[in-house]
Length: 147
Image (cartoon, rainbow, N blue to C red; front, side):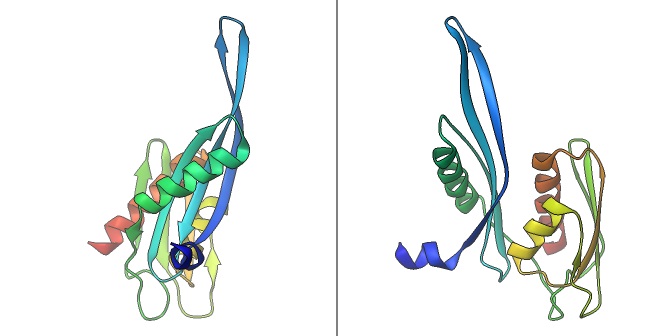
């Protein structure tokens, strides 16, 4: 277990304070969106909710490890073909880039691709700027690239 924890890198994308109304008033909680990857092709996203921030992050990391996918990365450290993926109203366009370009992408797409091990990529996020949907669209695109 110790080696597995060191093997994966995790990045917190968003922590949101959420509340629900109950009979006695409002109950406050936290929702965390986390990306986990090994920078060698395996990446996953997780969403966790808890009364405390640390608990939400821990749950999100566990979910991300359970839902990992294998990204198809070329020898040049890029994706193999152009990808258009969407989830909900969020749309992500990812294109392979030549060596030395690095990752040119918005926040969520950049984080997911970095932890997947992609080094050269040009991406554009269109439609919704909801971080959860953008992350899921990026994962969807990496799954499509592997087919």
